[in-house]
Length: 524
Ligand code: MLC
Ligand code: AMP
Image (cartoon, rainbow, N blue to C red; front, side):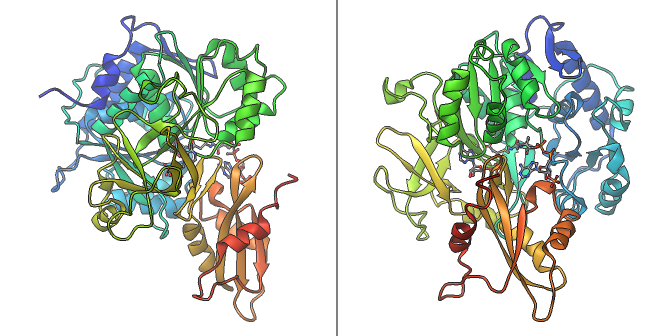
């Protein structure tokens, strides 16, 4: 049977000239395609040489990585695929309680972390039974590379079937517990192949990669897109609007969350002349305001292509690059929509879930967005009940997003049924943060709502009620939260109130809080 290891497909797309530049970094380093091939072989050989007991359940060993963005971090991801192990990306903002949960839940055989975090991360890892903890820093140092340097630069990629597990991506949960979305080699490859076609990747394309590589957008959509096309990447360690704008004349494709577009629009250097060489600007991970879509057209002279995805499904809809033959010649990119179901992917909108997955709705009616296709994950890691709950009887995944489908096939997202805030493209589940707040001394209860923010799109605002007789200080609560949770999850403001608005059933009326605070950041 053909080897369906995703790495094999990516490697097969490398250009014939292996000495050409594959990645150029913003600190002046160049990596050739040969470098990527050799380095991934060395790291894969290292992983395969480790003393790891075979798991009773047959699931390949997991490699958890909480490392700063670097080309070597990408090499670690590719090497993990190559070795046939399972990759577990972790945001560098996560604090010890969060890391403890992920490592305890996924029980990785290998953990890779920044050297400054080695002490606490290795303690957590060893306690959870992980035997191999390596370091990797963004200056090409760390024990991972030292050890890999002792291994050969030839390696035969592990044989994989399409359904074999390639990565586990944790998404926070509405109940506070994070769930690991299990993605297979087939999920990732089929999605990358569809996008290559749908976004019309061209032989000379050059991608500006300025997103973090701990999540679906930067790790899969951007990296797979470039590699599967044999395209060079201009690699930005951290997003800096001026530096991205400076690189536009050397690039053709850019992918960003809306905040990146907002920040670039604030730069006088963004002009049509500067963006003239670009072919495609893609936005996703959070709603793109129509004003930003329009401003970008005027200032940069390009129509942003907005697409919609999630950790569980990778990309499910997209506006087209050119009018989509399936929908007629009027099917242009349309602001305020997330486009059409990708080829091979079924997207539908259903009514209130009555246990059957919801009734079909007429066009333009608002309901729950559901999806089925080769891109959709197989389930949550070790959570069969949760997985069962999230799928309909006929195999559609309930996204938790609320939207509509018009008669032309465009999908528009109008909200979410899940209590989720998307801040600067990162997901924040209020239930998780409220859980931490509620445990703090003197706190009786709390509610966190998302409100509009000019930079991050949406941010969390906390309303906290004190226990009788307790005195709470909002700044102290925020400081205490910062010690426990990733920084992007911290509410931007905290208010101490005497009570939370409730309906007759006693349920907190978050909609009223949202209205109360919706203008909080308007003048910011
Ligand atoms: C940083 N901060 C944020 C934040 N990012 N606050 C809220 N939301 C965010 N997203 C806060 C920090 O806590 C800190 O606050 C201050 O901003 C400065 O931190 P920083 O790290 O210097 O910020 P910056 O580099 O400016 O980062 C902003 C950003 C980053 C927009 C560049 O958040 C980012 O790269 N976002 C992209 C996320 C992404 O890739 N999402 C894809 C998910 S995949 P303080 O108080 O500590 O100083 C997905 C599926 C799909 O959703 O469809 O793609
Ligand atoms: P994540 O769990 O990080 O993968 O985030 C997935 C969620 O991001 C989706 O369920 C949507 O709510 C949201 N999302 C992704 N792309 C878009 C988009 N283009 N517009 C609105 N929301 C989006």
